[in-house]
Structures are given as C-alpha cells and as structure tokens.
Length: 249
Image (cartoon, rainbow, N blue to C red):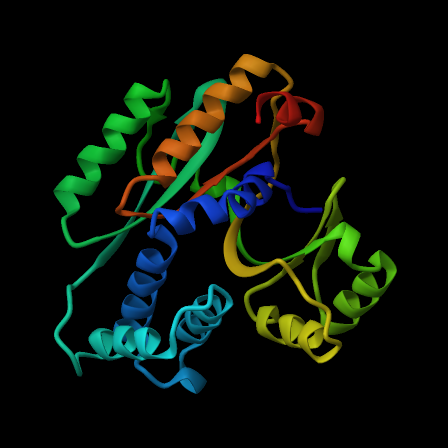
C-alpha cells in the first residue's frame, strides 16, 4: 500500500480560501500554458494538457480563459515564458517536502523558497534528497459521506486502480499514470462525483506527527510555501491524527 499524506485533504479543504486570493486561476493558467508549450495544443495527443483543462473546468474557469492560456502556450498569442523546477527539503520533525515551482523569474522564486524554509524552521536539501520517497501517481478523492465505499471500491478495481485508501472522511483512489484517465472516466461513466482528481506525488511512507506543537510548525511551513506566487504544488510525507488537526484548525 502506498503512503497517504494528510496534506492532500488539508490542501483541498483550504482551496476555497486560495480561490479568494486568486491563486487557483493563476496556477491553472500557468499549467495550461506550460502543458501546451511542451506537448502542443491538441488535447487528444497531450495527456498533461487534458488534465490541465479538466482541472480548470472543475474550478469553473471560463472557456475563453482556458483557450487563451493554451494559445499563449503554443505561441499563437504572446505570453510569459514559464520554466519549471523542483526544490527538495525537510520540514520540522524530518518531514520530507517537495516543492514544484513554475516561474518567469528563477532567482526570485529561489530566494522566496529559501527564505520560507529558513523562517519556518525547515531545511532545504540537495537535489534528489527526498524525491526518492515519493512516486508519481494518479489520485482521485471522494468524500466518504457522499458515496458508497463498496461501490467506489468495485468500480476502482475493475477499472485498474492500484489501491484504495480509506480515512475517516475520505476515500483515496491511487492509480499509475497509464490508467489514471481510464479510472477517472469509469467514475464519470457511473456518475460518481469525486472531490479531486489529479496527477500527484504520493509518499511511499509517512511520518506520523502526534505532537501538537510540531504539527503546527509543519502546517505553517506548508502553508507559507503554498502561498508563494511561484509555487504550483507542495508535497510532503506527514500524517497528523484527526484529533490533533481538530484542535489546531
């Protein structure tokens, strides 16, 4: 069984706050542009772009915005040239952290991430220091109270999912990259509505944080990183018991 990170569910729940800050659309537009630049504007031949468009639609991004971002990526319209890179490091308590950057100013992004790690008690590491602790996988999340667990499990396994991980309030479906879209489509065909579907980095193992003050430190670092304008996604291998999360949230 692959690892489960509580940050997935925390990040999903704080999405409404991020939307008010205007960050979700900004990140989606960057991803649309880079996906189109790297793989072309044809959705049928570009899986990354298909996923980016699906994510944009899920956030109710207007069709015109999506099309403009794709055209900027393919060069049909003028646009900023974003580059991608990854930072690796550690949060307090030895939690492994991966930070995906997409920026038009590498020096600014690097300085921001270094400052955040330092200020929040983390440590930046060398390239490759924690990447081996994660696997790139498809992730589909259902809210437990809205679905029948047995039905989700049956559809997931028949469609070729690798694993189903149940927590107190969510069901996580893990897939390999090749079957992600077909598993997602199987749920769509059955009209089973998921809360989130994305390609992500899942931890192979997790660090359980059962100390309240340490949990606060880790979450402060994660939130500070994610609030940076040049950061697309943040991954970590921690798990915090729900009883502690409820006390500190």
